[in-house]
Amino acid sequence: MKKAENEKKDVKPKKSIMREYAEAIVIAVVLALLIRMFVVEAFKIPSGSMIPTLLVGDHLLVSKFTYKFTEPKRGDIIVFKYPDDPSRNFIKRIIGVGGDSIEVRNKAVSVNNIPQNEPYIQHVDSGMFPAKSSPRDNFGPITVPPNAYFMLGDNRDSSLDSRFWDHRFVERRAIVGKALIIYWSWKRDETSPENQPEAFGDQVIEYGKTIGYYIAHFPSVVRWNRLARLIK
Image (cartoon, rainbow, N blue to C red):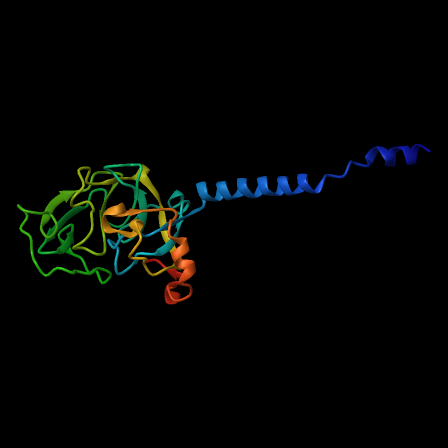
């Protein structure tokens, strides 16, 4: 009798299906938020400042934990809080780290007086601005402060970067993460207000508003050759 009574006591009431679904959804949401906060986050490229490395319509995964174990280095492509407006996220390439001397002469970049080999950049304007009229083609020299970074876009003639910002450098604490991989890429919807050059400038955004256009034109708008491409 006692054994039967104990077995009855061990029996737990069965959860309803709705409760099981609700618990599963809550757990999934919590895990997704934790992953987004501490592991990886997705971003979309809406501007051409990183062409040819990154194209308008590329969707990236950005690692938020890489720099918890290593230091950012020259050549890394990172997402960061825009120094002149921290509410916006930008993406650029690190050209100089703390203590480096940066100089641009006739479009050519030197770090610590060493000319840089930059096979990843492009120049779309053959014109040359003197330093007194624009910092685009002639800039510096300038020394990067400790725990800060000098950033340039790969589309060197069309990038809002450290040459132009009021706050020249990106501080270590402003780094969101390192760009890892292109997981998806759409060709640009030129008719969308979201995709006009003045809409976001060099900002990277987390979600697009033109999904209807892409669904209607699938699969011709997909850049299949860019999927799963590592960013470097």
